[in-house]
Image 1 (cartoon, rainbow, N blue to C red):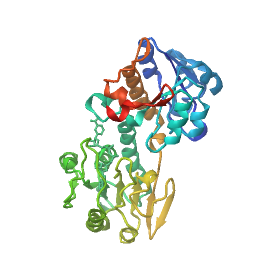
Image 2: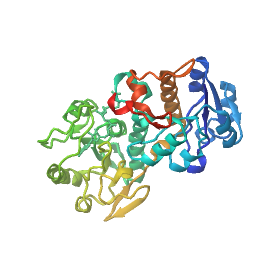
Image 3: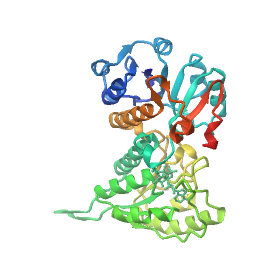
Image 4: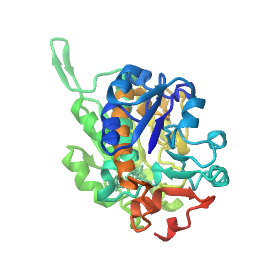
Length: 372
Ligand code: NAD
């Protein structure tokens, strides 16, 4: 099959779907790759590097759309994107199908066979294809660097001729992929770290990274069968806020990563809590796109309240474009090899990865999806 990577820079994107190493993985399996000119420039991958890896570089999106069998897209797929895809082509991208029924409808009407990367099951066999984990790793790392660059103080303890500097105190909320990376990065930079999550299973992971687990008695079972968090009741959230209030007063920076799939982010940091935080402290809210863990967060804005800086970045992976593209490329190439063979897509409905990620085919939504 002929796969195509697009130049998505006009949307502020810096990442690219494939890099030379992942292109070579596809070529080895007799696929071919087209790249839109300039697609990798912001990720430090010039057209010449695509060509040297064996891809064909074409100058316009129109040429790519006409020639490719399957388009690879990094930015969330919008209704306008879906309408621009020629009938009968294939698409692999981030569709968030439950949140975007309109996009699914358009793709079905256009008889596009589409696959959503955010639907890859979180199973061991699919770990090497898990783009959500790759991007969450970058977000967790970058969130700490962002906090450090906005803090008016050092992170590590320093003993200097000018006196001893105390280490910064970090509070990490949510210890999934991004939260665990934020803990590890904060520790590497010398901060003292506390972390909290509603899933008791993460307590040992938090401790093994050298952080203290904040014990908040949670009476509900808030972990679903897939290992994700469930939505906490209003009562549990109020209890969490009360206990986190005390921890927030001590923190120099908070990285909040708490998410519940398909639901608004849990509100863990109230305005009253921010009002009681130290002057100069920083909150980086990685849940900004789904409403924010902090009441004052505004997506992609810097909010200042009572001496506290609150950041709500929504696309941190795009601030580390080379490694983000390397990780995405490896995830994507592994995924493509999983769902294709010499004849095209495998149509193997017994394969959970295929059945769960295929969103539209033959002019309709994939009926095998939820049943699988
Ligand atoms: P996520 O982004 O959905 O959520 C981030 C964290 O927020 C989670 O740890 C969640 O428990 C926590 N959270 C939710 N509500 C909260 C609240 N009220 N207070 C505090 N914390 C709250 O999660 P994720 O990082 O995508 O990972 C979800 C799970 O999937 C984890 O168990 C992870 O280890 C697992 N996982 C498995 C695989 C695999 O096996 N292939 C890959 C990646 C992730």
